[in-house]
Image 1 (cartoon, rainbow, N blue to C red):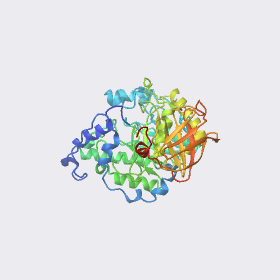
Image 2 (image 1 turned 90 degrees about the vertical axis):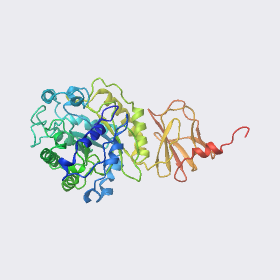
Image 3 (image 1 turned 60 degrees about the vertical axis):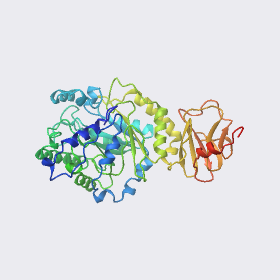
Length: 464
């Protein structure tokens, strides 16, 4: 995944574009536009959307609505970044950022010794948090494979743990009733052709065959897989990766799988990273975020999101029809940082009472409040108050008639009155009835919408 600050993945895309020349890949690639400059702080999908123009295999459009039905209902998933970088404990980009030589980096295999069946803890925590699926790194940019691949000895069965960690993960997720997703990084810092493939056709042929072979293994050896989550296509474009053929193979092996858009094809869903931006035109999307500032384990990173922030992000995603994929970065021994556990357990406690306001939500138009956010199911509007004002709560510009209001967690009736400008809910407790967010269910006589500009323009004012 990406670093904090300048988006590393997009920087690499720009660099990769400059390496691809017509002389070396003319037969395999189509002409590309000049590499774009990435402004400070620009997020990942800006470059991605501009480049995902290669045609899709027909299979990806077939039965998309049916294939994605469970995913839309799930809303909330767990991302797991786990690999040799966990032993370095300095972020998953340590090998690149610190320019660690390959031989030196390979020594981390001796420190990557997770306890038996460590992924059981990942799956149990995900279930407790109200997450419905997991996506775990099978191979990150460092090139180390967490399964017993036949294509390289640089894998968890032959080095380090001495066993197939992907198998343990799949079994753990299924035992908790969770859907199973595989993250796979196309970029590879370890493989000798990982960068050379941009300028050497023989190297490209070897590396693409290797990549397709690894994906084939993953989607052949572990039963039904629900999600394939590609990452970082540097240094090739879709034609160079043979992404159409790649996805055709994926759907032949796993007809019901869903795939993202990071192998330079449209895929089934978009992947805004570290920000929440809804797609237009009804396209599916999933915002992926870290719990602190790192994807892989970083022992010194203490910039944790609190449970209120996580819940607000989840509400924002659900409001606009998206999913929220929230990351943990286990240590090399497989243990989960205590702060990650505490935060997700708090989120799970809230979800155990309020989860249906997320899972069963429709797209929701109201969004204007100084201390609340909204989701909707049918004509019922859920006002999620994250900064409890005490005593009374107001909503501005509700363009539907409220029939009843109640505290969602305990079904307690709430007094209210309404005029064209304001829905006023009163006689409420001074202290927030729920932690860390209190939800009010507002039953309306029609689909709830909001017009705060009407209020601003038409509300009577003194002396006017």
